[in-house]
Length: 174
Image (cartoon, rainbow, N blue to C red; front, side):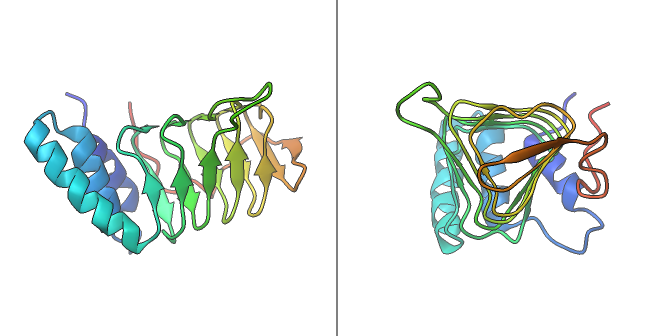
């Protein structure tokens, strides 16, 4: 049987000296339950808990297990975005949509992606697996697997094991 999203996220926090933030616990509980009344209860509690940290992540957002939120404050994730497994989000991250033009839509982010402080990822783009997005980067183009991204406009450099030593304690889905 597959572990719940709550357990997958908790595994990333284990032995780190940090506890999973309350808003993340409530978000994952709302995503894990099939009971409509309990789901509503968790979503209401999540709403109030997330407001304290200025977190805007919809419970309907597709986020894989093993999510790690470091320095949780001021994070915005569009409800149409998709985030893979074992990803790290940091303070001030924005994952948003573009409303017009060739990139109208929200991003799809792969597995094992580390997103640094105040990074912005916008538009209907694809961020591959094993990608490190440096702090303060603005990403509005497709990013291939095994890359390091930095700057505005973003500069992409290929690097094998780009997130090595950044994605700590990944959840083992095997």
